[in-house]
Length: 103
Image 1 (tube, rainbow, N blue to C red):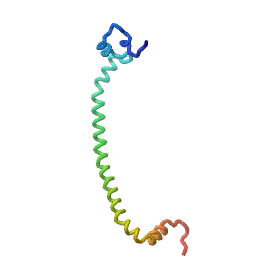
Image 2: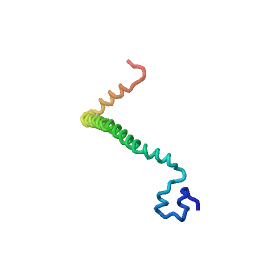
Image 3: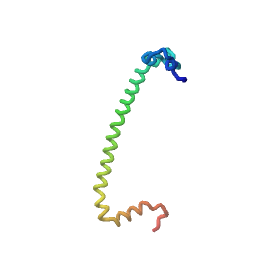
């Protein structure tokens, strides 16, 4: 039975010693390097997330305000369009005409 960790194959080691054994691919230098930089990387990630959130929250509320304004505009104009659909359709069809003007 072959394992990635040589300590797993050694029957003379008990469970605690196997857990403490370093993997074969990680040298002590690499492990010390990451142990030093890991807190800095994690804190930097949290700071960047906080900055991103501080910009995203105001955009969310601005979009919500614009959507609410558009919704209220539709609610106000919808009864007018329903009461007089012919004139609104005629005006809309004039706006959509792209051909030569007939006179």
